[in-house]
Image 1: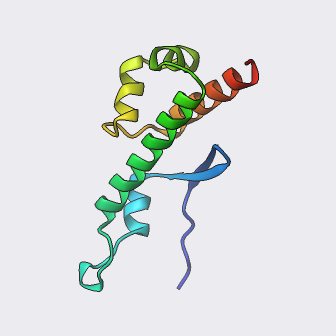
Image 2: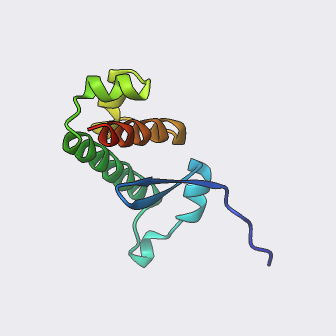
Image 3: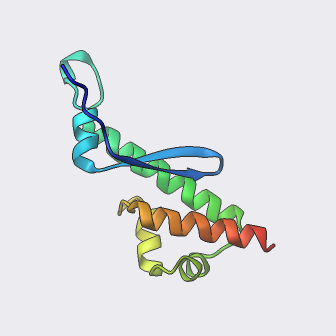
Length: 110
């Protein structure tokens, strides 16, 4: 059986690498059976989203940035950042990169 390749992108946040995959790929990769006592794919995705949101919030606060400041530096709407930090929205790779780059640049200029 030929193994299929999964398309993904990587982003580094506070020295930790995250992999961003399309949702259908994620579901395929994490498809499990509850009878084996494993986590459901949707539950795993929600936990992962919240961890990312928590790390972004912590990093923003450590950088001394307000949501308004970071949103402006990253070129996104403050409402979008607010939803991401509360775990209400899952950012795409482009948005994560904008946020991380904005925080890195801010910290370099301190």
